[in-house]
Length: 609
Image (cartoon, rainbow, N blue to C red):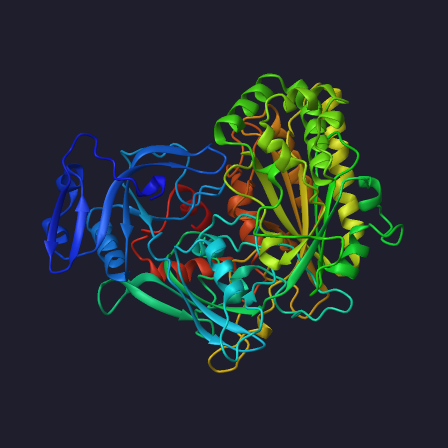
């Protein structure tokens, strides 16, 4: 049982009301607010109080009302209760998110908010298994790590010999599938020379959806009822990126035959080579890597010369030099930081920002030593800070960190998942810039030179707003042409995906994802992010500058992210007005399916209204 499954008693006795084989479990507090019709309905649900806290811990609310649903009937009944009592309904996943899509900052238990816990909706079944593709049905509360393992392990007559996978997945595994689809979760990957992979699945995971089922308003029943939105339905695109405006109970997704990836890590290549303005300057420019391998990622700490560059190679047989994986999360140096340690680091750097350059250099040194199997006393003693850190690490952890992991190979999901709950808790701003593939190198050079120049300007003023790495990935855009719809038609792309193309039939085919990370509360970070964000909007086409829904955006100097009215009310809608559906059209259809506006909060009201 995880933390948000714990029923908070607060000194009250637990009561259980039964009707047939179903039950509502609730505390005395619940008995005081639940109508008798709900208690006696036979609804299978568990009510409790919980603490909500997002990933960066900047949105926290204690003692919130939550209900754990076990089926669609309990979902419908819980929502019925919320409507009757004037509550907002906020679907809740693994809380690995930054933006206020669930609740907003300042929300308290006095507000009428009902959190819906769908973790019990975790069933997985393969409904079609062909050599060339598969179709899987998944409960909305299923954690994606469990889904990836199920697909990879699946074997059956007539199925793919090695199971199934997705071509493009986010780095964390502790996400629910509904949560991933809520923000069109993405990974890294584009079409490359000699590729045997589908050219249609280089966008986000939202594009893999064949149907999504959730609870929406049913006019005939005058109630919220379960409905399936098939991809080839007229409104089949609306909730593929839901932004929390739907309680998703089930999704059906198309998957590809499983494949194996080799992941090579480099920490000895200058950022000036990787981001050189000339794509042909050397073998390690981003464009050259994409052309040859398709998948790459850069993790670059400020005030360091050499980023952590990751290159994935699709290769069916293990190279002799590669270490075989035994599972995901193969970089222990990046996820041995419990929450309390993250908070200590945050407090130190918030209080003494001048330590940021040393902190970033230390992170680079630990990463480089660990990746290359050189995390030992001899090498640590060469750097004072690293040596001091070494004294705090157990011998068992040192043995783990001393294992060479710069060349690993295994099933795709093993190498693509590397973020878990014990990774450093950071905040991040994030954007996806749509470009022509041939312009990737030039535009990345522009971005990086602006970012590096800003860091230097702030440093000259003794300001150190960025205490985390710059992360860069590159993906394709949403391409629904590879989907196996019921009628064989090509469906609409996800209506609100950051990867849905506004240049239909044109040459724009690629997205550069750029995330600048720092620690929550870092002095001057809001000012830095505001300035960088405005530069992005001033530099790139409005319809091709998209916010990354899960991250920070819409900055102001004083209040931080999600506060800039011009961006919320103008820039974001404008960026999607040239799609097959405009932002306003999508918002209008969502209102039709939720006339009571229960799937909302103050932030979403401002964004959509």
